[in-house]
Length: 433
Image 1 (cartoon, rainbow, N blue to C red):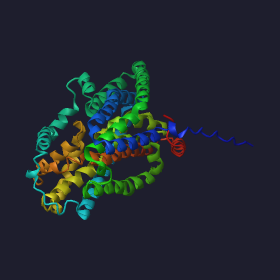
Image 2 (cartoon, rainbow, N blue to C red):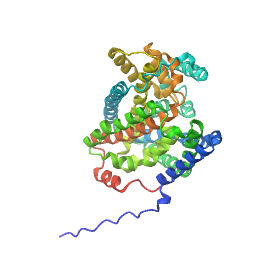
Image 3 (cartoon, one colour):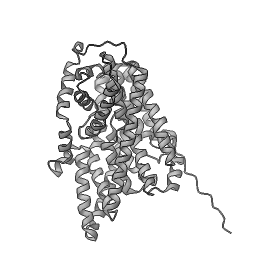
Image 4 (tube, one colour):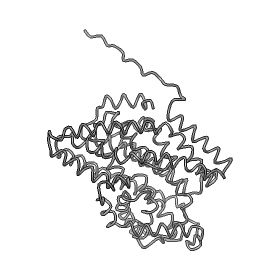
């Protein structure tokens, strides 16, 4: 007869030491400063920018280390190819569902109806629109393909774009895998180096509340306190659209794969708040990598699916493309037929992928989408330049949540998730730090 020994409960840490709580307080302070002293907006902006730069400086080497070690330690290339194919098919299905949901809601809600805007009248935004149009002309599919292969290995890390680093990492990993046992010292060394970079991220996260404070303070000071409540029907409709996507799409998918979505949101709550404040998904990539592995998902799956998801799976951004495109058509008085909207959906399936090769790509790829359809004037983007930051504060967290769930879902398909560790970790909440 065995006696069950109760497992010791995890010691609860003081609330003031919880990173999510610290970030929440910092964001509230940023709101207050931006509201009461809007002239300080430009002064606060560098705080958010500096935090993002601190994280971005190690994103490329972390992607390299995790992808190379994940593939090289797999032992065979067949499993890598199988995981990649499953991930791409999963991304395609979820992305299509996001686009369809957004198109249905924006047609039902019609946030742009009655605006009767003339895009030529937006002289204040003319310079911004011109820059976007210029970037859009350079961001075609051919440019996307050429951007995948870096001009040099060093250049890929210097630029910091995800796709070139991912491409080089995969090539390097398969070459290392082909060496067999002779490559094991290199594989072990890369694992050790990755631990160094994760330790750097732990240091950087100490100032995450400062970065969130600066980013949200700048937004409120720049666009006014009303920016946090509503800057028009478009903002309200889009936030509702993001919430519906989480409830109607991600929640059933999570339930199908046996993942408690509410607990997952709580587990990565600090990361979601960071990206809501900074509008940068890259700012939490290293932490997401570590947290997903701590949930019991195998290193190989995390190393492959998460970077590929950052490059190709932009659920929230697809919601943005569909919503804003139809909104602009409504605003300038263009009545899109069902056929035109289906064509728009197909174009967005391509541009949402092409956006991965362009830093800060959402607004640029929106212009590319409009230019490709030859239906909605690109100059009408001037209508939403002022609220783009508000919209990105909603769709970037959806991107991060979608990629976290995708990694766990692919892991479940592969039988590469320790379900006991997953359930226990989600019940306990995020680890300290």
